[in-house]
Length: 528
Image (cartoon, rainbow, N blue to C red; front, side, top):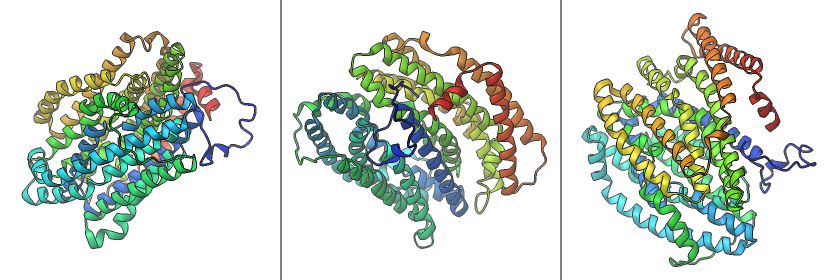
């Protein structure tokens, strides 16, 4: 979706050839593979959410479980930048271009060894301070809820070590444009949590979910990436050298990510902080965000992950004009797709969320979740596009600008969250989330042009406008189906109305795109 490749006369003879574990991907096939993975992972994530809701509902236990992820995620974010592999890809790409695989493996091993030591020490400290953190950050929790959150936090902390190891080793595969393992990992991770809940919830209650998390991350990101790296010839070096040039360069690139706070990550921290004073609030917002993230991940995260090595390769080769063109092309197409997806999500919000109703999760919970999901869905285009602009900076070796931008936007946004929460409760938090991500995206877009990395003139404004027109018309048609076609409140009826409204949305969207002579459909066909 980002870089036009040189035509290959052998391409297309075997459509499954790129699914071999060692097969390299083109930009298009990588994006398609990761989008497919995101779709399947999103479905599994929704199944996971549905099952957890059915068993535990939206109450103190699930609030404590969702809040327990926060301290581990903060440690990962501030110690390894949350996206350590992104910085490493830039370094390994240079070794790859020089044909120095041995030097690349040595550098990767040095970064891995040093940060494993740092993470282990940090996790041990976090195990001790966990109750104080919970008491401070989730002041709305009662004593039992706070104690449960502390215990779950301590169980989840080691998972960050395995996430880091898997991410660093996986960067070797990304540089070689091998994305199959990256596509499989989230499926294994979500499956681990689901199986933990299915088989262990009677014996361990809410703790079964934490056990599933640990099993999923060990078997998924860590084991699969290690297997893939070894298959591709990776040689581990047991070296601890904090003065090695590669480690110092990685630290220089990653340090801004360590000390910087992006609203993309901080948003969930701020939401849980304020929502802790409302029983079930953390769970309802988290559920709505999970449902929103499923399609958003297909557009933004998958496209961004697939684009990074290609952006990085173009920039490192000095092909700056092609780099700017690639970023603009990716942004334009993801923006167009996200407008259409956002229309679908908003129109079908009621039957989509109603699928989560059942068991301990009540109709009132479903109604509240529908509202939050709809508010989140309004900003899907900004969530999708900001990731591409951020990766444009990373590929150019500039991690400072996104870090500073993240801090400024986050600090400006916190009072907005506070004011809107006190004015409109959880709905106000969802609105504040939208406002924050709009500010984050626009700021990155302006800065990447001022840095002369990308020019707005290269954006396909006409195609985006056609997609917007198609989105508005298809939204109106799908919303009319949901509103005016009578159907009972059963899950079977929900699926039927979703199918009917989706058909209306698809037909109208395609019709408008064809009438306006949009190239979007042709581009999708050529990519697939």
